[in-house]
Image (cartoon, rainbow, N blue to C red; front, side, top):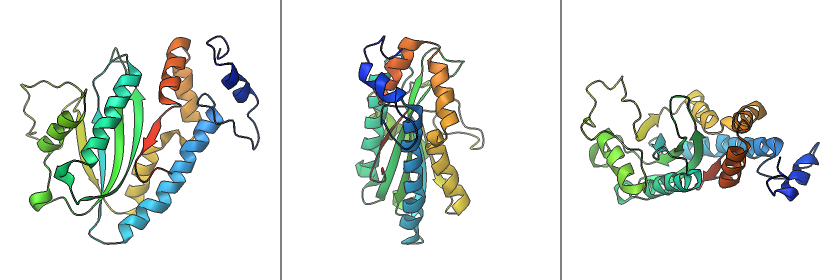
Length: 234
């Protein structure tokens, strides 16, 4: 299939990738899993070490979504750019210590087009109270300011929830403070590196292969199943 679409070199590299060799092709399931597993191991070492420096440090889990659309390359770039701008925004000045971002493309059955979104783990100085606190409404407004193409929302729906336990559907941005327990930290790390297990990548590839043109476009646009960025990127 790769040869039919002009990826002759990748076709040969993937075919010959076995054992301890690594072809490093974006289309290779084994090498994609290896890259994500390497990132997971790196995060498991570095994140707890950063938090242990001071008991006041916090870990935040951010998720920002671009609008749904068929142009995966442009929307994924918009989502990554938006998250990079947020962690460097003046509103978070002197708060952010280090961050790690991962891009995901979700194509749910109840939607026509895929959704490009970014998950980010951010180690910060205290920002849960006082002048450094950012409300849910402010997070969403920051995202809409920073992302060139944020997920569209109904302007008639108020951003302040009447019941915090029942989140609104399709929020464009969500920020959650992660407890400092080893179990909670490991949980968000595993969530951000879900493709470290080959069966997850196989499942994603199999879904995309129902449409070979979509498979080629998606993997070639992302240079794999995902993208990583941030200071904590191995």
